[in-house]
Image (cartoon, rainbow, N blue to C red; front, side):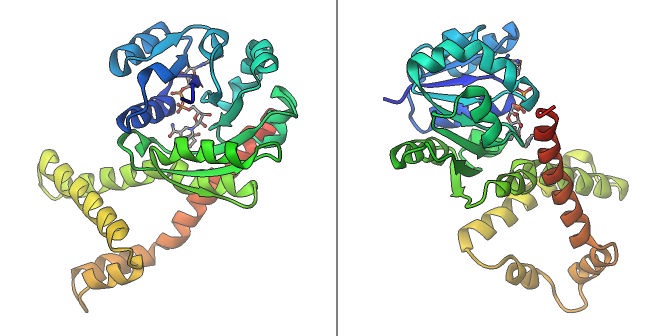
Length: 272
Ligand SMILES: NC(=O)C1=CN([C@@H]2O[C@H](COP(=O)(O)OP(=O)(O)OC[C@H]3O[C@@H](n4cnc5c(N)ncnc54)[C@H](O)[C@@H]3O)[C@@H](O)[C@H]2O)C=CC1
Ligand SMILES: O=C(O)[C@@H]1CCC=N1
């Protein structure tokens, strides 16, 4: 049984923990370190896992440490875990946006297996999407273990070039928020035309779910699916022409680039 300790018990850790438990991972094999007492209480209440105020205690028995703190917190975490790292030599899985392998090696040690991942919050319902990149110290068995953990909560893809983890961040890491923003905008638009918020939200959310499921389950090209909705000179064409006139594709590309760039900035700030 792999023993996994989460360092940081915030939103993303909760999504991963909830997803892992749903796939049958034993609550006794997961611990979490979280400084906020209320969050610790909620982790115990919602998931039945042991939580600790101190990183050292949560990590005491772990084979795998999932570093789930904000990038800025990472150097402090290293200081608190130094003894544990030397004694246990756990594999590290960092999910922190931007934070590079060379930085993690500098803080946590050059001889540890380190996998840099970028998951997303739908992991909570087993529908996550995770990009992974491993350092050279990571053995094939350790790569498989990291992938196994992330496969439990959704799909996984290894990237060849570490820089592409920042692209994963701009695509799928932050991506759920783009779709939530789309649903909010659709709801607002229908509300402005007189529909109740409840009905507008239900229809917008189900449309998001239906389109997503069709895309994934059919395996068809999104462009083909889009064309099937678009009757010549019909309503969809009118909406898509409106999107195009506002340069929708460029708007999305600039947003993804902004998120990707921010990941790099978060990391660069830690070099100073
Ligand atoms: N929220 C998301 O959708 C995603 C977040 N991430 C990454 O996951 C990491 C965590 O993000 P969130 O969960 O959104 O943030 P969050 O703020 O919800 O969680 C971070 C947790 O770390 C705790 N913490 C603070 N100092 C600590 C310390 N010294 N030791 C242990 N825990 C400490 C905080 O109390 C907090 O509960 C970030 O690095 C972020 O880039 C990655 C993918 C998606
Ligand atoms: O917004 C963030 O910085 C984190 C990383 C990806 C999703 N949430």
